Length: 324
Image (cartoon, rainbow, N blue to C red; front, side):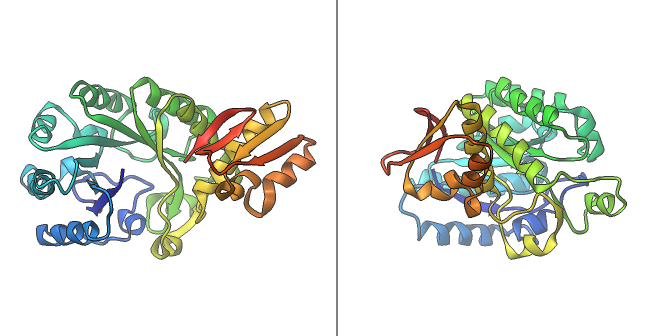
């Protein structure tokens, strides 16, 4: 389902997480006024063929103050009531969810609540000054599920202190907590953040791009196998982000790199790689610059490819390993 994205960068968040600069990540510098919000929605609706959901991203939506939050929600609700939108989704912090907040959200057509959990490892959360622990994620997830919302949990891999084990633990905890949607964000070091300072001081040595891709691919497998919808892998590419990124797992095609690694990992586990895929996923199957094909040849992994444009993803040995 399509979203109309309304970005409210850094609004409502009283924390200074080591990795965060919403302005570079979203490309927005200030929260839109109510009039500007209506303009964003109207402009988007004029180009859409299906009825969308209105989504408030960036910052911490439920922490911006009740009056302001209800103002935004009322605007979105008007479009739902008119039949021009089918619901509302919000993104917020786990520690900005409680019964009172959910009572307010319940007055509007909110369907999806995404939490920026980042990690379920307390030491990782502490190192990045996240301001909450893993238990806060568990509490918020339980409250959201009890109210019947679709729960989304976002994770960041390759943060300070993160390992393959802690990333996989986070992914498995998301499944256990009942997440229906997720986003995987390999850590990008943004200029002007505490993480950038740690990087320059060498108190944080980031994963290589290859290590970051491997972690994200392993988490992808956990989510895919447990029917958790993967909404996105990697930050939305933009010129502003490209200029601000000084290290870490930045790549303008991170999602494709991770999908290609999922194919590679599945092929390695199979006795022989019988790959079926639509031609539009050729770069995912073969890898950028045919890196997967070269890897299979180097490792003597026998593989053959059958192109079938009726497929909705990639199959290996008859089983889907990713869908689009």
